[in-house]
Length: 288
Image (cartoon, rainbow, N blue to C red; front, side, top):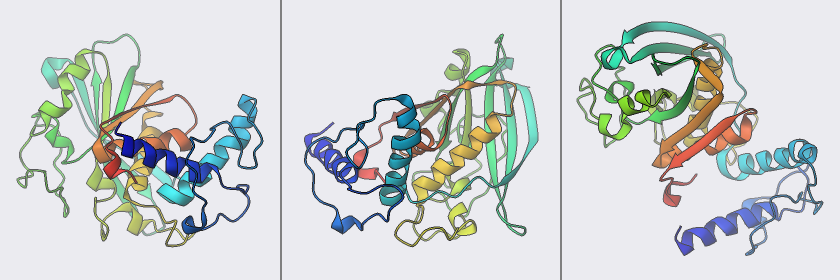
């Protein structure tokens, strides 16, 4: 990591950890925080009390860290809504019958009149003796770009990333980046949703989950942003995976490239259980 990037990270972490308050108190504005240059002690409560046990970490320190990250970095995530899962399509002939493809529609029932849909693509190895461990990652240009397999639905979107092929009917355009067949051969499943299905990567989006689920528990300065929305969407993917008997829910790894590698931090903070994380090139310039 470059020296400037490391110093920036240390400075931000130091400011957050140095706060002389408890999580039940009002947090100060960012401009009011003192500058701290040294690396903070992660096993120290905000009032200076050391964390000496797993119980103190889970009951005291972890809630503090959650609140700090939400308040100053990600914004406050809303709770999970009521959900329905529907298997739209299943095909066990992918990669010469080495894998099964499942297409699941996740209905997020936000209010009595508003429902948001996620189109989940799940690729599962066929030749296994037990439930498969799974990688969870968001894709940039659509589920159909991971492979040329014709069974994957193509969702037309109002918003498309500038680096995506404008011809949305072209299949497999990102297959080299994903190496999906190699993942299957090694015994791993992959679950993915296009980021635009959750929240388009732009400030003024009217088509994403944030506009539909604009909860009132936070003000404009602590309202959740796009990366937080992506992380929230990953939570919902994992909610589904925990219902699928083909998946080993004790071995879930969240991963992603660049900005789609940032959202892995939030599932680690907000979800209990065995969730692993492996970000790829989470460049500091794109940090939340």
